[in-house]
Length: 190
Figure (cartoon, rainbow, N blue to C red):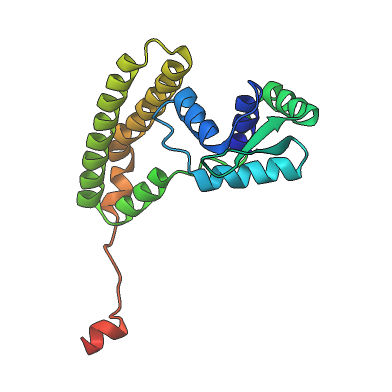
């Protein structure tokens, strides 16, 4: 569970409360990851407490509700170290909606394939422009810069797939027979 381990990493710097962990995560990883849902973070923290990787304590505050602090345990530190040195192994295959869209566009014929690849190419070029801006803004943070570079590499690889799809799938798209449909009950009573 990578997010659980990311929380353990942040707690290795010392005790923290939920919103502080959320802000530190978003700052450390950068905006290309997207925001971390606070509800999901608290579920992760509850699981880490249950598994003995983290302990929680309550700090009384006179002018606000009590604050809950989370702290890494020895068992949590051992789990983090074990995870950090193990290689990343892809377990879910290469599932990507892009492949499903290419399947659909190819089965729907040459014009659909051409329209999809054109639209997807534009979307990737737009993503690359945004990442290029983000990369310039992230030059002072080597970790965020590296993550942005990785995102750029992924987008470029996907762009290469889209660039070759029209040519490589043209024969299949030409054989497409179009849509076979039947009227739904709503269309019949319409």
